[in-house]
Image (cartoon, rainbow, N blue to C red; front, side, top):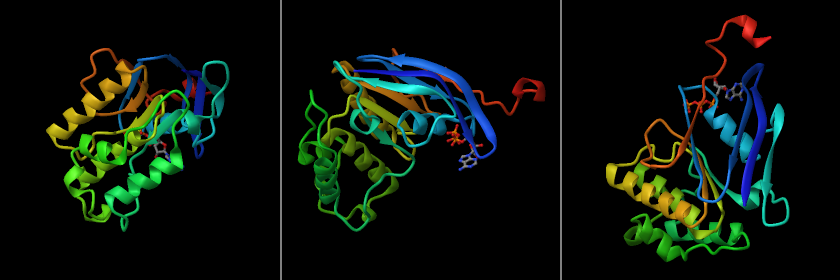
Length: 213
Ligand SMILES: Nc1ncnc2c1ncn2[C@@H]1O[C@H](COP(=O)(O)OP(=O)(O)OP(=O)(O)O)[C@@H](O)[C@H]1O
């Protein structure tokens, strides 16, 4: 699997947020987006995940012999956790596991194992809405484990997490990369990945007017 972004540009409202961004991710690669608030990190992630249209350029997802749709190739974890508050942890994960399914070539974990891996095994019977902010984030991460996707696109994945949970997430990301997966993440906190590349988003708002024309 390869993920290639070619000369991407995106606009929100009237503003051009970035242009000419290219990168190429293959097996085991990690790219971390950094930059100040509002520089366009979330926007870039959403464009790559196919959730927002690009103003310019294109994103190519290539499987063994063919193009794959973004929704089949990646997990996208945004600021929100995409879980139903009134369903239990287990019910939410069972839903996502059957809804997403596995991309060919890999297999997601069982719901029980995924809940255990993020430290929620003991409270899988509780409604999602009862969990603390950090527990909810852990649970959102368990969603990545129950269905196989080679590319993980994560927006501020460690927000609201304690140090131990941060370490758990880092370990899970490292295992994903070691197994040939890929990571594209936006973060203000270091993720503790030794071999990650960094793409620093600067935005255009600090540039003189002449640069924008
Ligand atoms: N729907 C929208 N219409 C107009 N402008 C928008 C819209 N959504 C986002 N923006 C603007 O786009 C810019 C980039 O937002 P984005 O969320 O991509 O930044 P970010 O780098 O992820 O920021 P942060 O570090 O705060 O998460 C911001 O200035 C934001 O106000």
